[in-house]
Image 1: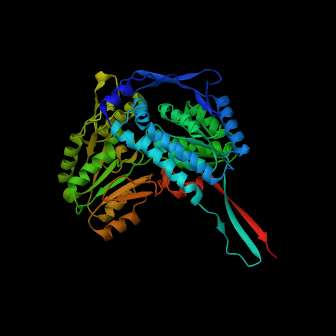
Image 2: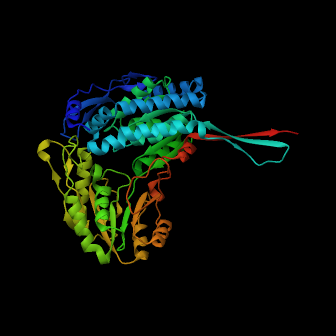
Image 3: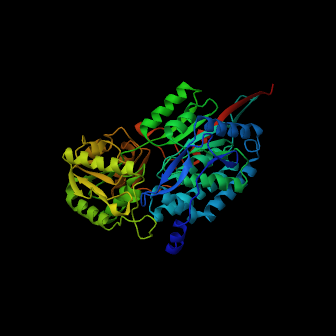
Length: 495
C-alpha cells in the first residue's frame, strides 16, 4: 500500500448516500437521513438514508420480484458463477478505494482493513462462486422400485444484518453463499458503517447481478432492522451482532412468519497459555494482536488471557512489552498498528468497563485511558488488567474494546473450568507443546473454534460460529449453504 495514494483517497468527498433498491439508488420515502461521523477526527463525513418500514417493504418487494422472475434463482449454476467471479474481480480492482472508504467510516487500521475487508470479501465471493457447481444433491438408498432424490433449493428472500467492525468481510460471509445458492438478498449494514456495503451493491450491478437480487437498506436497527425482522415476506435472517439484538430477532420471527434466524453473537474468548508453550515471546505477541488489533472490536478477540501460575509474572511482562510496541494512531497511516474506536458511544462503553474493573479491584497493569483527544477522534490505550477474578465484570462481559483480563490458573483442570466459566462459546486458544494436552483441551473447551499455538487466521475452508450465548449461526465453509437452501425430497415410484 502506498501512503501517498491513501492520503489522496482520504481527501475524496463522499456524497450523501441513498438506498440501493432494485438495481439503482433511491432516496428514503420521507427523505430522512443519518450523519456519518468519522472516528478518525469526529467530523461529519457524509450522510446515509434512514430507511423506514415502507423503504424495507420496497426492498423486500424488489427482492421477491427478482426471485420469482427466476433470472437469478433459476439461472444455471455456471451463469451465477460467472457473475459472482466478476464481482470478486471488481472488489479486488477497487480494493484500496474500498479499504480507505471503510476506514474513514469505522476507524479500523488500514493495514488490517485492506486485507480483512475488500481482499477478504473478494476471496469469499470467489470461494462461493467456485462452489456453486460443485454442491450436489443426493440419491437416497431406497428399495429397487423407488427412486429417492434430495434436491437443494434456494429459500427466497434472505435478510442479512451485519455489524460495524468488519462490514465487508462479514457482509460477504452472508451475501456470497446466499446469492450462490440462488436467493435474493436485502442487506442491512450497521448505521455507523454502511459506506462500503452501499458501494458493494453498485459493484454487484456492474458485475451483472440482475435488478433486485441484491438490495442495500441503511438505517437504525430499531427501525430498519425491526422491519426486516417482522416482515412477512422475508424467509431467513442472517445476523452478526449483540446478544440482545439477536434475542429480538428471534422474537420478531415468532411474531411474524417463523422465518429462519441464524445468529452469530458475541464472545468472551479464553486464550490459554500453559508453561510448556513452544515460544512464550511469540505467544505474547500473538496474544496482544489477538485482543488489541482493530481496537479490540473483533467478535473472536482473545479478551480473557489465562496464564499458568508458574510463568504468570514472566509472561505478563512479555505481554506488556509486546503491547508497548503497538502504535495507536491515525488509522489511515500505514505505520499505525491500532486505529480508532468506531464511535464515541463505543468509546464511552469501553472506558466504563475500565472504571468498573477498577471499582471491583482488578489490577491495572497498563493503559486504561482515552488518548489523542486533540484530534477529535476516538482513540484508547490498549488496556491490561491483571489478577482478574472470575466473578469480576471484566472477566464475564464482552467489552468489545481494547481491554484484556488476565487470569491465573494452576493446572489443566482449572484452566478448563475458567475457560468454560462463561455464557459464551465463540473462540478460544491453547498454547502448549504437549500434543496430548492440546487434543484434550480441544475436546474440553466449549467453543466453536479452538486455536492451538496461534490465535486467529482460520480461512474460508472451516466454519465460524459458537456455542451457548454466542449463538448458533455458522459462517464460512461449505456448511454456510445449509443456511440458505431448503431440502426437497422427490419420491418416485418405479414400479
